[in-house]
Image (cartoon, rainbow, N blue to C red; front, side):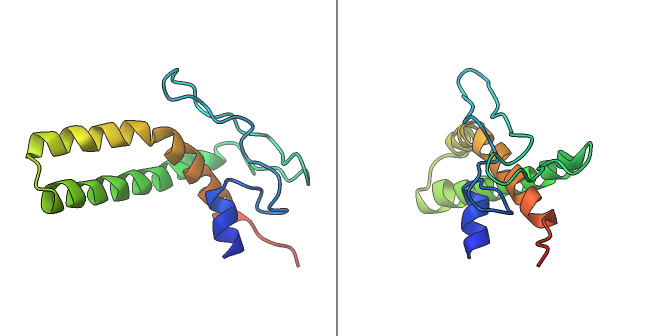
Length: 118
């Protein structure tokens, strides 16, 4: 459970204290969050090789699809809004959660490939 919480809060997989990202980014300024190259606490290198985070795009896609399906179910089936309004809400949610998906998908991707040397 500790790993899940650390991944969701974008903490280092090795020490669980250092931050993976050094700033939050800003959606309104189209500024994506900046990653640290290494953990500021334990010096763990986050990017294992060039192109390592290419696979995080698939994780981000999965997160976005899950959010869109959940929104569709809530706003169409339970609240019974028109299809056009539901589409507008889903598009808005996708844009607003883009920065969060970016950070979360990279954090999850790092945790998938982290091997604890015990």
